[in-house]
Amino acid sequence: MRIPQPGAADRVKRNQASPPVTNKTPKDVDDYIAAAPMEAREKLEEVRAAIRQVAPTAVESISYQMPYYNYKGRLAWFGLHSRHIGLYLRPPTIEEHKKELAGYVTTKSAVHLPLDKKIQVSLVKKLVKARMKKNDAEKG
Image 1 (cartoon, helix red, strand yellow):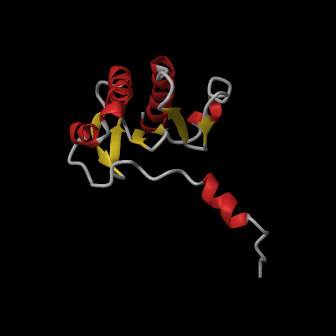
Image 2: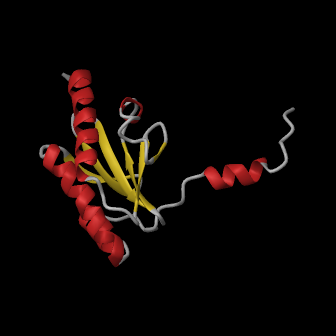
C-alpha cells in the first residue's frame, strides 16, 4: 500500500489542466468560438486560421468538445481554458520542438498559448506542419 506524501493532493490539483471555459458541446467550430468570451475569440480565430492555412484539406469538426482537425488521421485540437489556449498534437511533435517551445508550458501532447500574450502564429503553423508530415509518413 502506498502512503501519500503530505501535500501530494495539493500538488496534483495545482498541476492539473484547467477545465475548458465552454461547457456545452458545440455543433461546429463556429459555434465553439461564438460561445467563448468576447476577449478570447480573436485569439481562437488566429489559431484556427493558422491550422487551416497549413492544412487546407484537413477536415474540421468537434472532438472532446473542442475544435479538431483530421488530416490522414488525428492532426490537432485546440481548446480555450481560463488562462490559455491549449494546442494539442499527437506525440512526439511537442518533444521534437522543445527548443522553440522553451518559453511555454508544455506536456507530452500540448502547448499552452497564454491568453495574455500574442499568439505566435508561425509557431502554430510549424507545429501543425510537423504533425502533418508524421501523418503523411504513417498513412502514406
